[in-house]
Image (cartoon, rainbow over all chains, first blue to last red; front, side, top):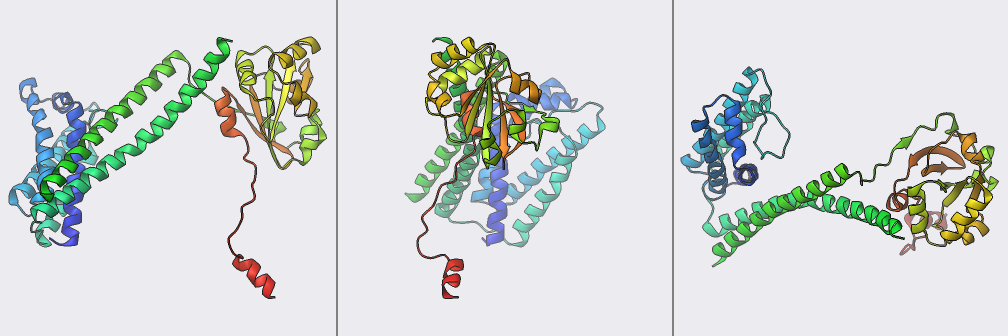
Amino acid sequence: MTGVATTVALLGAFVLLWAGLEKARDPGAPASTLRALGVPPRLAALGLLVIPAELAIGVALVFRPDSAWTQGGVLVLAGTFAFAGLLALHRAEQIRCACFGSGRGGYLGANQALALIPWIAGVAILIVADAGHASRTRASALLAGVALTMAGVRLMPVLSAWHEARGDRRSAQETYRWLHR
Amino acid sequence: MVAPMMIAVAILALIVFVLCGVVYELFRDVRQLRDAAGILDRPLDVDIGAVCGTRPSSYGFPEALDSTPSALILFLSDRCGTCRSIAASLDRQLPPMLWIVLEARSAESAASFISSHEMASMSSDGTLIVDVGGTIAARIGLDATPVGFRLQDGRLVNATTVPSMRYLKSILPKPITLKRVNGVPKEREAWQVS
């Protein structure tokens, strides 16, 4: 497994695992996006399947980036998102994107359609650079690395919000102390 | 044995990732509640217009301020609750580079404010200026308190409202401290050689 192929596979795994876990926090969000796109409610419930699909393909990118199933899965997911983006562009109203969970304020549209290009490029690199597959031990270590990086990146806004909340608490405390004098 | 351990680390890290997301949501939630309750610090910039770039002494401040490289002049009033809260949180000795102007309705109300907040020592060292009747504030055109005026190179540069002591501490100019250097810096070495 070459360095370029490993980097591409890990980057893809990072994005898919992040998106999958964010959606898992609000599992109803993909279904509501599909309903907004005009998919009948019964079929829209299938939107829930996106979560395990993203997580499974994310893990597969670390363990078996060379597998046709993994590469095909990446293309199917990216194609689905691009199709959803194009559908949203053709509708009059703006549709909230649940790509990285419902907490983000983005809308479905050109971004999802354009994201297909780097996904296709990534899969092409995996094929051309002959991704191969790492030993189980190495792949597990790589997965741990991806997960730790995700936790680290997520920790930054938490630390900042913590600092902010501490400041808010201290200034409120200051006022209460004076009020009770 | 290594692979299962690594998988366990990966799963734990992913759980940490999710939990961090939960904690972040909680922090946001608390902030929204504070916002709704109106107990968030909301400092606002005050447009000081023509006052910008002028000397403090022209408004009745001590002339010593005209040659101060960096300072903050805080306007407090004996009639405002936030000012009382800030005054109550001040130590007897003011932080360096902080000057206070106390606007008071009368000399008696100023004396009462000073004694109730143990500010007498500030008054004696000149860092507390009592502005009976709001003369200085009227010259500047200020009708709100608490407001902090930043002073740079002896000139008033900008002003902000000061909603809490915590915010006041965050905007105070930092005194310059001397730092011991290990070894001789290159520039000095060259100078010594020449």
